[in-house]
Image (cartoon, rainbow, N blue to C red; front, side, top):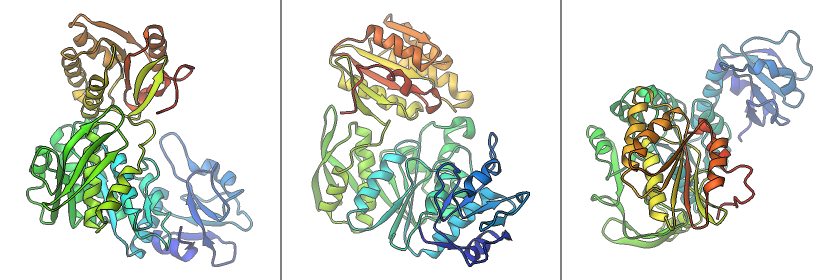
Amino acid sequence: MRTLTIEDIVKATGGRVLYSNGNSHAFTGVSIDSRAIKGGEIFVALRGARFDGHDFLYKALETGSGALVNFPPPEPLKGKTIIYVKNTLNALQDIAHYMRMKSNIPVIGITGTNGKTTTKELIASILGTKYRVLKNTGNLNNQIGLPLSLTKLSDEDEIVVLEMGASVPGDIKELCGIAVPDYGVVTNIGPGHLEGFGSIEAVRSAKLELLDTVKEVVISADDTFLMEGISKYSGKVVTFGIENKADVYARDIDVKDRNSSFSLCIGSGLSIEINLNIPGTFNIYNALAAASIGHIFNIDLPDIKAGIESFKGVPMRLEIKELFGATVISDVYNANPASMEEAVKELVRLRKGRTIAVLGDMLELGSYAEEAHRKLGEWMSKLPIDVFIAVGPLMAITESAFAQAGRQSFKVADASEAGEVLVSLCMEDDTVLVKGSRGMGMEKVLEGNKGAGNAV
């Protein structure tokens, strides 16, 4: 990262130096983890509902060079800088904003209900063929993760690519206030985090808070609900799609078991064959969104192709594994109604022998939870799904609706129990889907099974 002086931090945060090491000290990084802090870094003592970074201050300063606090330590530490601020989270965000504004480089913000992380990685891969790119690590996309990612800005970085998540109205606006994106991508709009939003209209409004900041936005032409929402946007709109007319689109699509191929078309005169190394039609949409950004930044078509084809996927997202000769689709990072539907479609599409769906509760749906789980069961009952293992109390609602089709089903309390049931009935040539919200720990379904191979 670019070094930060005490003066930079005070200017950014309005903080007050309590103790100083006596030098105009330059910090080499920002850390919020006392276990992982490195020499030269400054520790930000965040306070949360279940933790307080101040409890780990002395541990952090065994290695780190200083700290941001909102109450002073009882005694000074020799050679360590302590800066007082009113709110340490706000200070972290202020430092990130300060560093972003000192860097006169483009920032791209990516939001949407599904596909944010994959699209972010694809965009970074494409832009990385020409520029040095800074991106969020993993899905550090909230009010802590995004500013922490921005503090890693260096003088060599040329473009920033940031995933932006939202759980309640105002989240995207707040993140935009920190990162000030110039370009935006909205992947799609679906019923996710309804507990915090209350309605699908509120989800759309929250995601489109991005439009108040960006001068150009990339959106899906096939998401008519999303398209309706941008009707009053005055900036430039670039569309991508498969079904409806779009600026960037795919033709001659061939979706295979573990990858897909298509012709990437831009306008009426540019096209190139793409071999996408991740499965699913929805990932073609993610690739089209990323290609749209590549085109905006004048990346040549062969380099867009190279960037897309070099991407091998995100861990825990639609990984293909094997268990006792069965094919397992492991998509255990998160779940909402839209992503669950796409994953079940993949299960049906990839089936060889029996199909087994091991599904955990979809969380954070608020008052919509029971209806969403019942609708899922009713829909699944009409599909060629042979066995359903329902994990959690909400999926028990899905199981009740599914059971009316007369096929085999089980209700279990947790992912470990689901794993035991799966092992007892799994056979060669079965196709298995394992999916659920992150809080359900669905990766435990496959843990401890020696027959479960690595992703292939």
